[in-house]
Image (tube, rainbow, N blue to C red; front, side):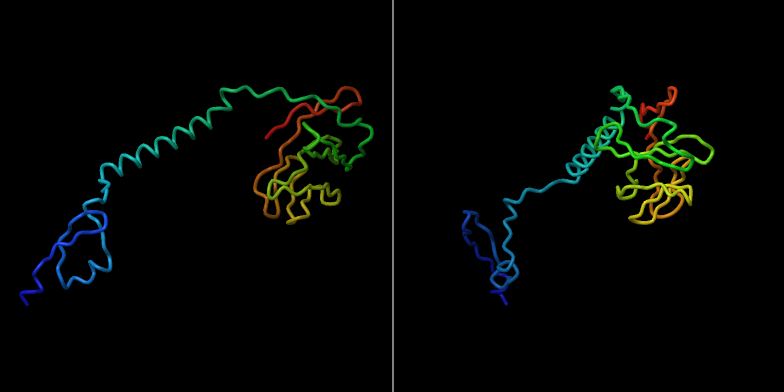
Length: 180
């Protein structure tokens, strides 16, 4: 029994001397160099978390404020179609503001013209005009948007389609901007 409490000093490979009880098996299985361990205090951890949170909040404020500081560039003016070429209940595809941005122009049953981005707000499939339903239909997941406002009313989409601003001069229809 006297031997169980007896300690012996050993020299480790890293040059540290530590005391060890002869029968302490866990010390052999889990050798930890406590002297060389760098502790992080609670104060240091809380300071790190607070500064990290402030940095993230500041970055969010900067990103949210950028649109208010930077003025939006002028959208190009592009001819879409002639008014007489689109019958009531008909539609026409065009690209605006660039050739990579597909859009759809629809003449409603009351004769008004509306245009929207053709990219579905759910998973970016192309929407098509469904004249029978008087709606814009996304065939990928059966989403429906109203022609009047571009708002979703069936299927998985939850956000409305971006609306293309139109101007009419005589018989010509021009796209002049995008409302997101």
